[in-house]
Length: 415
Image (cartoon, rainbow, N blue to C red; front, top):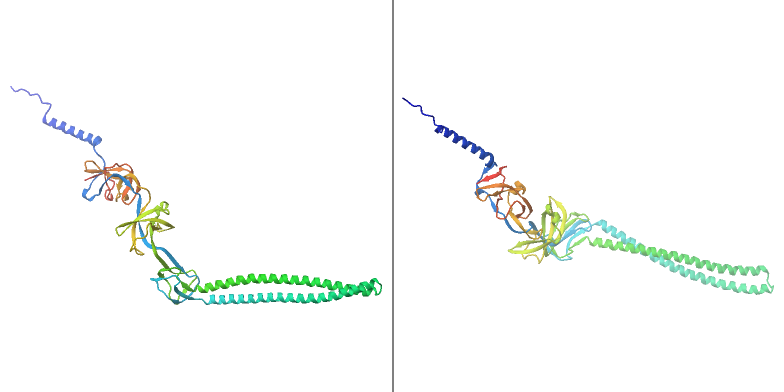
């Protein structure tokens, strides 16, 4: 007689189902609570630049390009205008102070000079004539006074005689009054002549003073016109290299027009172009250095040109201990321009990552070296070699510093 066997609870099928369900639940729990959900991207490590963050001295400087120029450049501007009749020295030649470079012609200047000379000559003649008239007037007064004195003496004698006779009642009243009036008339006439001559002399002196003043001004004008004519001969104001002469025989030159320049070769400076971003930090006396033929040469800013063109401005830098030997005008060289004093800081090497992140975040390589994760950071100052790290990184950590252009928005890079 057959017996009914009881069914087993833990059958192979049930065990499989429970085990599968348990694994599924565990997987779901792991994915929900523990799995890394960040977006990932597989990259080739050998194509990346990985730099190590370190603690060190941050030297704040920028590298700019300087062009060698003479320490002094004298611009030759035409003091007067005219057309070129003779060009004696071409550009590129050495000149000495006083050497004649050009000869100009200007007929209007010559005519003005002759007119000024003629006016001066006329004033000289007028002054001489006025002085001569004053001397003649003085002689005439002396002659007139001498004649009046003679007549007054005669009238005085006649009047004194008639006064005595009139008192003795020898002559009538008419004869006495006649001689009296004649004496008084001549005396009064002498006073009038003196006053008249005094006025004429004062007037003549005033005319002489005015003529002398006018003559002095005219003679100054003549001297200025003569100097102006002398400027038609253009001479070298200093010794040096006539680096350019931008005129030719027969060409017309306007007053104030630049016709060339002379370089003083006794010293050199560096003309440096700087990005306008640094304009507030550049000042006279700021130090820099330049390497030439394996030696370092110190420089300092001596002049700042305020004009900003195409986002850049220029400064002049002078060598502290003289320019290098064999340096030539027009040569260019990199200059390390110091913007601040060195200080200790956390340093991150400069790289292409900055163009994508703006310095706000980087990919930091994990301790296992198998992946790099995005991390927010804060950067401070920058020089051509390093960024100053203010927050987010510690010395010893490794950071991908090459370009992030192909990484998209992925938060994790797996090598």
